[in-house]
Length: 132
Image 1 (cartoon, rainbow, N blue to C red):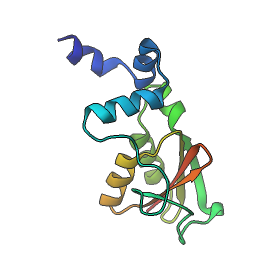
Image 2: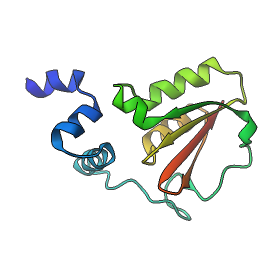
Image 3: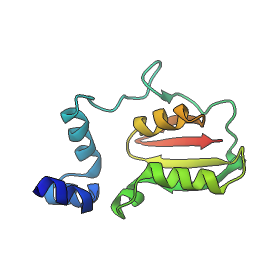
């Protein structure tokens, strides 16, 4: 019963704080518990992360920049925020999501819905760019 009620109202940030972990470490533990293993590292052929931006990407087309850490800390979810941003923008406008982790499930979901999506490692962060 506790699991069913707390899981509905606790954010990842809150759970991580109670557990004394940074959010990316908590996400890693959850991925491991689900049998997904660690998030793929950037590199040739390693999951959805690429070495450079896709040919369709132009910096001047970015119309919205979202930060996954801020969204998670406020109880939001990057997938919902990306969807809202894409729906509010004209076709070919780009939404950029910045994160400390590769948002592999988000990339897979967006691509399955016909959204162009790419994730590029930028130092210790990730830039995910999406467009309709």
